[in-house]
Image 1 (spheres, rainbow, N blue to C red):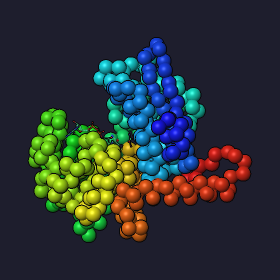
Image 2: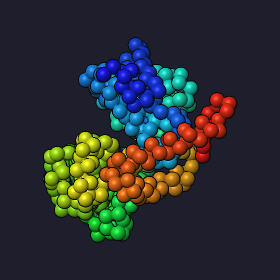
Image 3: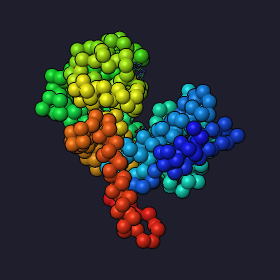
Image 4: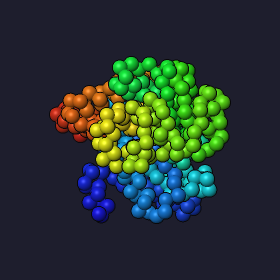
Amino acid sequence: MSIFDYMQKYDYEQLVFCQDQNSGLKAIICIHDTTLGPALGGTRMWPYKNEEEAIVDVLRLARGMTYKNAAAGLNIGGGKAVIIGDPRQHKSEELFRAFGRYIQGLNGRYITAEDVGTSVADMDLIHLETDYVTGVSPAFGSSGNPSPVTAYGVYRGMKAAAKRAYGSDELSGRVVAVQGVGNVAYNLCRHLHEEGAHLIVTDINEENVNRAVNDFGAKAVGVNEIFSVECDIFSPCALGAVINDDTIPLLKAKVIAGAANNQLKEERHGDQIHEMGLIYAPDYVINAGGVINVADELQGYNRERALKKVETIYDNILRVFEIAERDGVPSYKAADRMAEERIASVAKSRNTFLQNGKTVYHR
Ligand SMILES: NC(=O)c1ccc[n+]([C@@H]2O[C@H](COP(=O)([O-])OP(=O)(O)OC[C@H]3O[C@@H](n4cnc5c(N)ncnc54)[C@H](O)[C@@H]3O)[C@@H](O)[C@H]2O)c1
Ligand SMILES: CC(C)C[C@H](N)C(=O)O
């Protein structure tokens, strides 16, 4: 399919290619939809094999942010950026500053933040060239690393999913199996441990496993074992596509609730777990804490206000289950409907009330 055909199919607004010979920057910024507000989404740095792989990724990720931001109740549209390169080798001040200048050139239509392969330090460099970056160091009045706040949102969403499955959101005594104990999941484990949940963890990084074992008394298992352990809740917090033909038959949990993006390998896997009676908290609804936190910076960052908003992930997850019941669909489809209904209703009200062609922010 041609790029324009694909953009037309999912109604993308803009795709921007950025090249800077001096720093070696090769980046792509994608703005999917700005109905709700400026497009906000992180910058991923990844050693893509070729340009096509990078284009496909940025298109998919940007559309995902439209849904994530809408479902979270933010007045923010969806976008994302990718930098082609190895984050362990190709980072430099010049590269991020060049990238920042391209973002500035979009004059606020796209606002960036952290994603896989980028950090607060990288955002600080981008910030030297543009106003349109979030997740910058707290020293600049910004919100810093989004991961702990993402974790808090996942914890809240997990409680809502437990309520749906077991009639109580109490996690004390529940067994939670966590796949990947990195930045987000370490903080998630802390919340779960404090509430009295029992943790089973795995990671390809031994140091991360040891940290969870030592700090929270977690039981460590092998990376393939995690899918089949006896537990109440399975929490995918590593990479995407872990709910698939191979793993579904192994799962013992009644609830799936974790931080990873794109957990379902294909939509049909969402149908399959629904038919099996599993309670699945859709990934982009439960892991929206990070973007809710960085979006708060657009009003002048207030951590208390941001955390209050992150708490509403609990209600958003329950609302998804209500829509699923209302429409007789799996929860992943219900989440899409929740996001689409909100975008459509705001678009309609703008058509009705906007007469001067200017953008207004509905708060
Ligand atoms: N950081 C955020 O604020 C945020 C926000 C939304 C979504 N997410 C998503 O949540 C997930 C975790 O993000 P993070 O920031 O904690 O990343 P991270 O890299 O810090 O943690 C991921 C962990 O998973 C481990 N891992 C990778 N492959 C594995 C495998 N096959 N088996 C077991 N462990 C494996 C890694 O070693 C690492 O410890 C990612 O999918 C990310 O896209 C993160
Ligand atoms: C804006 C970022 C903090 C968003 C985060 N990378 C996510 O996937 O939700």
